[in-house]
Amino acid sequence: MGCQFRRVAALRALLCGPRFQCLLVRPNSGGSPWPQERTLVAVKPDGVQRRLVGTVIQRFERRGFKLVGMKMLQAPESILAEHYRDLRRKPFYPALISYMSSGPVVAMVWEGHNVVHISRAMIGHTDSTEAAPGTIRGDFSVHISRNVIHASDSVDGAQREIELWFQSNELLSWADGGHHSSCYPA
Image (tube, rainbow, N blue to C red; front, side):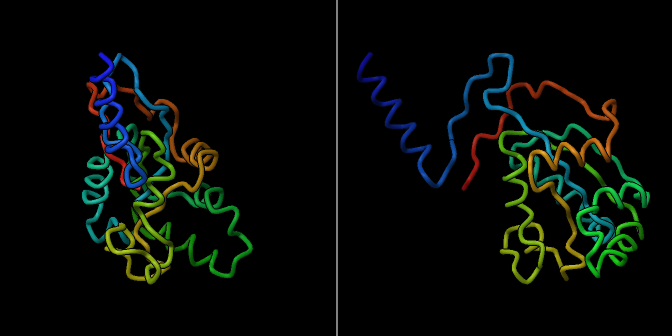
């Protein structure tokens, strides 16, 4: 018994080192093995027009996150004004609202362990010149004002944004059959 325990401990140390948060898949006992968060991700008008919605969804699904809400809409200025309320005094605010209301937006709610932090890493820096290759913005953004995607920047911000963009009856809780993300590269 002790030898088997040491082997499991050694394997866990190997697979859960600093490079990976955890490579082990925990058995599903009916509930999620990790605390779940939700975040808002929105493909902006330039991303929709460039047909990148499927690519964004694929990246989040491959990462192991669960889609619990999605809709395509022409964002009303009332939602945009509240969503970007912290930027009201910035000189680019009118252009931002005009751009975000210029075409359809695909708003999504994703659920998963540490989804807020990880999704921000996945999308990359706001400025495309600073966004790393492999991130959504690094791969697809053409300009800071046309940066393809939005993702909530904090758990509290995510909750506020989700409540702004979605009614509670538009979000689904569903069993994923034990398919969790097994790997979260750091």
